[in-house]
Structure formats: structure tokens, C-alpha cells
Length: 279
Image (cartoon, rainbow, N blue to C red):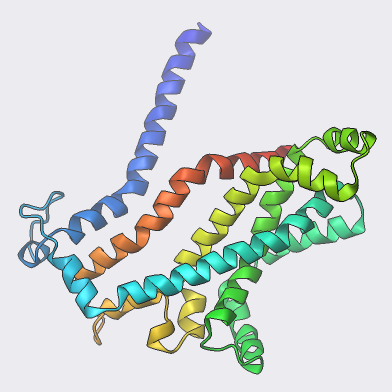
């Protein structure tokens, strides 16, 4: 009897999951369809899923109208730098938080939780004033520092989960064998943390690559703007979007995030589950 009741329940779960996936995939599929539609089909009163005459004109127009390659280079520089710096800072902090029990670890955990509750709007004005005093407005380095600070709490939380998943007995065994603290960390702990470090770095990269609000406020020079900001230039003065080129540029800007997330999503999930179970 339990087998009969479990099959309909499982079928219902799969159906709900399928509906959720369709709901999530709909905007992206429509974006792809729009990117390859020629101008006459974009203005049609009866839009179709599959373009009748697929064309690359929107992609050519997008590259002609806006400096997408330069903006992508800025985004790549900022995202890679922020991810690397965040991981370098978060890894030793995560190790201390995971291995040490005390007020410092408790305060750091509280900081991680509280920092995620603040919306962008509440911090942008004081952040702007601080960066202005440091002469980092309209600077890629200033934007990198902002992304590092913003992604650091979540990166720290992820790495704490990975560190706690590494048995402390392995480090104790290495110490018994005569290995020093530094040798133990380098030879025993670091290799086991490598998947978590890679997953955390990739998450920080995706966050910085897709971020829009800080880049819009802090970068003024067109030659320094990142790809999400450049996408807004496809909107006319009256708010009318150049739909075809905008869809083409947005599709190209989405590919790196989707590719990276598809590669590391299992490791990200593993890190979250490790952090939830190991307390």
C-alpha cells in the first residue's frame, strides 16, 4: 500500500519540479528567441516561439552600437579580481571560524548573517562618500573592493561549511606524525578544501559579473563601465528599448554566468549542505 501511495506522490513531485523548471526557463528561452528574430518579426502582433527567419542582424547591430567587448573586458577584470581577493581573505578566516569555538567565531558568524540583511540602497550613500574620500569613485579598483566586501560574508559562510566537513582527526594524525601546523594546512587540509575554494571563487565571480547597481552608481566614464551597465544604453531617451540588439547583448552577457553555474552547481550545493549539517 505504501508503494502505491508513494508513486503518485513521486509523480506529483516530478510534475511540480517540471513546472518550476519551465517557469524559470521561460524568460531565457524567450530572450534567445527574441535575439534571433529580424525586425519585422519583433514588431509582429502575433509573436512566435521560433523565429520564421532566424538572423544574426541583432548581434551585429549590438556590437556596432555599443562597446560590448570593452565592457566585457571590464566585467571580466572586476569579477576575476574580486573573486580571487575574496577567496584569499575568506579561506583563513573560515578555517579559524570552523576550528575555533569562542566569542570571536560567534561574533563572526553573527556578522555574516546580519550583513546579508542589508539592502543595497541603505549602504550606497555612505559607501559613495567613503570611496569619494579615498578617490576611488569612477575606478575599477574601487568597484573591485566593493564587490569583495559584499561577497565576503557569503563566501566565508560557504567555506566554513567546507572546512567543517574536513575531519579534524586528519590534522591530528598529521600532527602525531610530526607535521607542523603550516605543513598540515598545506599538505592535508588545503587539498581537501580545493573543491570548496573553487566553488566559492566561481560564486563570487558570478555575483560580480552580474552586479548592476554598484557599477551604475560608482562608474561614470563610458570606457570603464561594465557589461550590465552597457546594456541600459540600448534604451532610448523616452524609455523605448531597442529590443533586438538588447536581447542579443543580454543573451551574450548571460552565457558566462550560466556556463560557470552549470559546472559548479553541485559543489555549491554540497558546500551549503555541509554548512547546514556541520554545526
